[in-house]
Length: 250
Image (cartoon, rainbow, N blue to C red; front, top):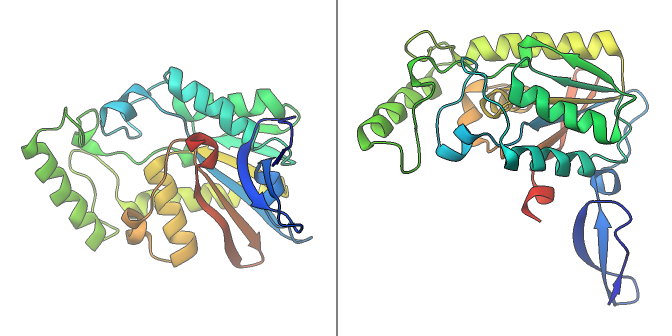
């Protein structure tokens, strides 16, 4: 077995060479993604790193501004290394700390020449009265879990149903998210754009862009610092990667 030295951070992948020998290679996204078409734009949609509320299973929407914890900061450094070699022109984030901090780490480590943008349209969904409450894990009561699942089921049925207590609907998030994305794509005319956003926001945007049905967002998974890669060419949107988390899991 020949091991290629880890000259940069990345993911170890074992592959079979043409001669039949096994090789362990250090690869990043730049090594595995196909070339971008000349007239296309490539979007790298990330979720922020972990917060204490993530770890505790609390609903963390747009109404609370929670910072990254130590694990989340390390995750941000790892995903920054994973994006090394990608010629990012723009790094955008929402206005919330967990998103901004993750994007700032990506920007500072390998892409300090990229334009840094903050847009409120990329903020997390507001979950109304559920924000701050545990909805999974040991801190979640059976009663709260049942209530949460019941409300979540109504959101699956209708994109216009809002979370009780002043929350947003799926359509609210879809509308502001697509407007912000279109503005960013049009204003920058950049080829390689990273957006660091949020779990539910990403799910809604992905289901809207790829399936034309934002109510399907509950079928999508988004881990902390996952990377989704979408190519935009004309009116077409093509997914290259969804919920890519090899860098975190390895």
